[in-house]
Amino acid sequence: MTANAYLVAGLRSPIGAFGGALRPLRATEFGSTVAAALLQQTGLKPDAVQRVIGGMVLQDMTESNPARIVAERIGVPHNVPAFTVNMQCCSSMTALILAAQQVALGEVDTALALGLESMSNAPHMVPGSRWGHRLGHGEFVDTLKECTLAGSKMWDDPWYMIDVAEHHAREDQVTREEMDEYAVVSHTRALAAMDAGCLDGEIVPIEVPARGGKTRTFERDECPRGDIDLDVLRNLRPVKAGGVITAGNAAPINDGAAAALVCNDAGLARLGVEPLARIVMPGTAMVGCDPHFMGYSCVEALNSALAAADKRVDDLDLIECNEGFAVQLLACERMGGWSRDRLNVDGGSVGLGHPVGMSGLRITIHLARALKQRGLKLGGATVPAGSGLGAAVLLEAA
Image (cartoon, rainbow, N blue to C red; front, side, top):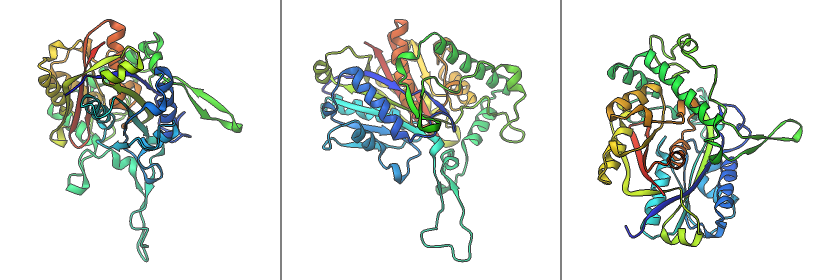
């Protein structure tokens, strides 16, 4: 590596509920609002951006290569390359890692990392319709449903994420009561952070269409609920008969976008601002594991990042781990030896929501801000993904 990599600044949209406030907009539309606000906040002109790297899962060809779409919408010059990666839930953290590698290598001095998802606008497909079905029936395939595959029908492993979550509950001996208790923690911490203004500085209000040709301002995460308690959660039916996973102890389906500016020393000097954090390098990781134990990937990714940086988990002041399911978080908490008082201190995706292509970048941006707000030094962000993939980043507060 020839230079440091810094997380200069990061912003995100409020997280929208499925079919909620952000439904009228495409991911690249509200993602462009976030990216433009980030440039304005940092004072970076669009023509100074040298690379744009996005992460998004539910892409379709009407929104092909969303990183390029956002770049064009915010005025980044045409000659600046932009590309989008799909590593399922790891997508936007992977985009950040790639941006950090490129600035650290000196290939560019400034890079824009994006995380985008509109699960509300996931399309349906009709496979085979191009050539006609003649006497047969066509079938609408829900790409959102297929997104929840933890394995793949293409390699004859058609497990869905709910199957993996139930598998974790059995194999890791996590009870329904423990999951429900943790779900309350996730919502309670998220609401406390929102009410205390801890999230205000990272959220960009989004103007969304309203009735009568008007607009309204969307500025507060939609999913955290103040009425969540154990009595409410105990009364929810499991998603699968005889199971323990419910809509209350799993992350909801969501919309949202995040953007982060990544610079090396030269880019930082030209910008003339203090960064949020230094991205520890070596200290990033991407891993794979058994898809049937998807949750373990985030522990393995974080441990790999720590080993690369010659650090131990006890060196971490804060840990952000994406919560696909409460059971996944609890299994990983045990496996990783993570202390609850350092873990997801301002709530997690069970409470806040999980727009799959956005979450990895969201938790990294929040980790940087949480370290700074608390006067702490070192943190790790990690995210597991369906099909047994994980990514992790270590941050050192500036």
